Image (cartoon, rainbow, N blue to C red; front, side, top):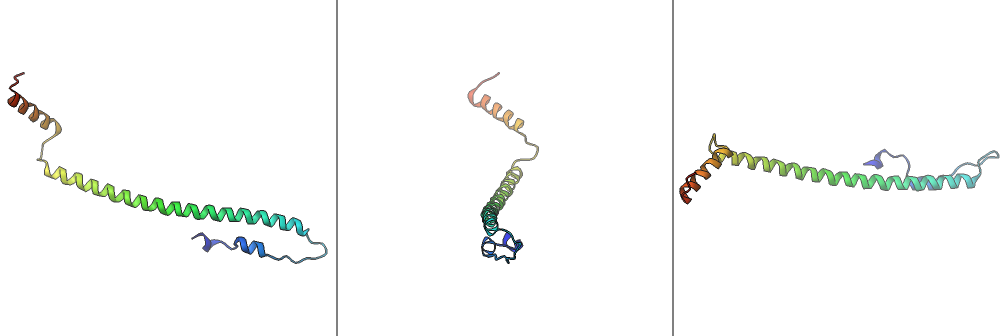
Length: 108
């Protein structure tokens, strides 16, 4: 993914040769700087690869959770279809209460 957009790899930086002229830079300073660039570049690549893998894992988890939500919604819809129309929890509690009165003989 990210490798398609990068121009240089740490190896490219390491193997880069500079032309030397009479008024050129000090080679030790250039090498030291390039070593720091390589270290940073390598760390960036590791971080990017880790984040890409984390992203893939999160996308897969998200798909699983969406499927689970879809299944639960279908289950709820199926259960609502089975319940008689116009019946609410309050109606069910009243029916249970009246049945308890009949069974246990309580007249309140």
